[in-house]
Length: 538
Image (cartoon, rainbow, N blue to C red; front, side, top):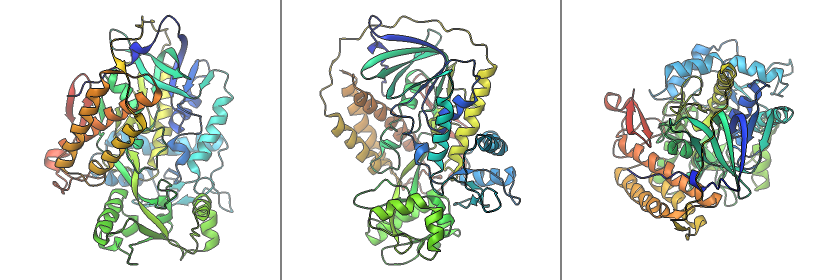
C-alpha cells in the first residue's frame, strides 16, 4: 500500500494567518454556491475557490438539469431511468432522494429568477438526452445552463454579508484533532499559508478529470478535495468509475470542447469515417444509448476503421433551430471553421465525469466528523457505474441544500485550535520538472485507465505511480503545482487499484480481459481509506 503524507506540517505557526468561521466551503461550482445560498445567514461562511468563482465544471455544463416536470413524467420514471443507467450500482435510497427533491429545488431556482429557457406560453422548455425515457432536461441560454446557473448563484452569494470569498486560494490539507474530527483547513493564497478553523467543512471541490490527457474538465480538476479527504482519514468510494463523454470536439485547435449530449437528444446522428451510421449496430437505442455504451462503441469503431474521430451530424435539422438551441456550440465550431448547420462535427470520446468521490450519506456527511461533501467530489452512489445525463447539476443542488439544512440545525460551538508544527526541513527540495511530470501521468492514465482497461496495463500504471510517489515522499512540496501533482498521483493510485480489483465490465468500467458484467461477485462498491485500506460494501 502506498504511503500518503499530509502537508499540515508546512504551516509556520509563527508567521502565517489564522481565521475563524462557522462554515468553510471549498469550491464554487453549483454544489458549493447552492450550499452557501441555503445556509442560515447568521452563520459566518468562508467560500474558498481555487481560481475565480467562474472556473469550475459547472460553468462548462452544457446539457442542463434533469427534473420530472412534464405531464407524462414522474419521480418514479426518473428514478427508473437513473437506476437503469447505473448498471446495478446505484444506491436506491440516495436516488430516491435525488428524484423526489428535484422539482422542489428547481422551484427555488425559479424563485431566484434564474432565466431557464421558456416557450411562447411561458412554460419551461424540456430537452431530451440519452437514456432518458422522457423530455426532462431544463436548460438556459440553449447550451449554457451551468454558466447561467453558477453566475446567478454567484451574484446572490456575493450579496450576502455573512459570506467571505477567498479566490485564488488552494486547499492544502484538512486539519483534524486527536479524535480525528475535522476542525479546519490549511489553504494557500499567493504563497501565503492561511488556517481557517471551522465547525463545518464542506468539500465541493469537483472531480479529478484533469488526470486524463483528453478531458472536458478545466485544469483545476486535480482531485484536491478527494486527496485531502483521504489524507485526513475519510473513505472514498467508486473511484474506478470514470465516465467518458462520447462526443467531444476533435479539432487540431481544440480537443476538449464538449458537444452536448442534447445534440444527439435532438436528433444528431453518428457516422464513421466511411460515412456509415454505426450506432445501430451496437445498441437498440442507437445514438440515445447510455454514455458508456456510445463512448465504447466509438472507441471500437475508431479501432476498426483506423480513424482518429467520428462525425456527429445535425445538418438535417432546421438551421434556425440549431442556432437557437445550441448557440454556444454553434459559435465555438464556427470560430474553428465548422458550420454545424451545414457540416458534420468531428468528435471523439474524452474523460468527462467522476462517479467516485468521498463516501457520503443523505446529509453529505463523510466518515470524518464535521466534514461534509457534495457535487462531483462526493461519492453519493446516485450515479452507480454510469451517470445519467444532466443528473450531476441536480445532485449538487439536492445534496448541497441538504448539507446546508443539516448544518443549520446543528449547535455551532467553537472548535478547539490545535498547535501546528513548523515547516519540516528534513526533506530535500523538489527538483523535478512538475509540468513534464503531470503530462506524463496524464498520458499514462489515458493509456492504461481509459475507456478500455486490462490487467497488464493497470499493473504498469500502478508501478509507475508508486515509483513517482516514493520519490515525492522524499521531497518538500511547496508550490501549488507540486501539491496538485501529488494529489493526482494519490487519486490515480486509488483509481488504478480499484480498476484492477474490479474483475468485470460494468457501466463506465470496461475490462477487455473481463468483458461481462458479473452480478454474482461484483455488484458492490469498492471503498478505500488511508486508515483501513480496501473494503467492499453492497
